[in-house]
Image 1 (tube, rainbow, N blue to C red):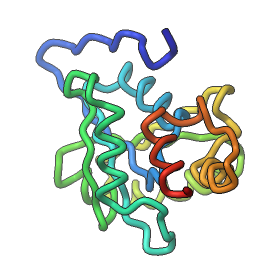
Image 2: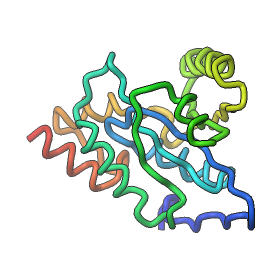
Image 3: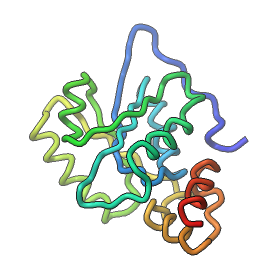
Image 4: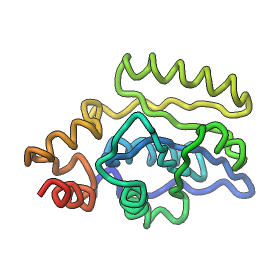
Length: 174
């Protein structure tokens, strides 16, 4: 049994606490999955939002990223949904009555960027809170970019991404 096979926390009766977990997820990593799993101890439901970022050229198209994500969460009892947006994350949150955005932090450099983003989001939508979760030490060094670079040159990425994501990366780079 690995850390992602742990039982999910029970839902509180009559209360639904929802959060968003946005990212480009190109591709999703085990670090992302750890943040989501830990987020489920704080929130009843998490919507993983694939954000369309015009400043990035993704390896996987939007449909592929959503499919890879949905495969990750098929056994999460409906507690994790997958969606996408090309707009502001806080607008999506307000429109869908979601009061929190989860952000993962790996290092001080992440904090600086994320702190500025959280303050802007608070200015745009004061009812939406940002919740920071520190990445576990096991995943602190990984990033989607680093994993793609390793996969491009046939590096061993086993254990850094779910097996179906590893297979998809190998297909892209074969």
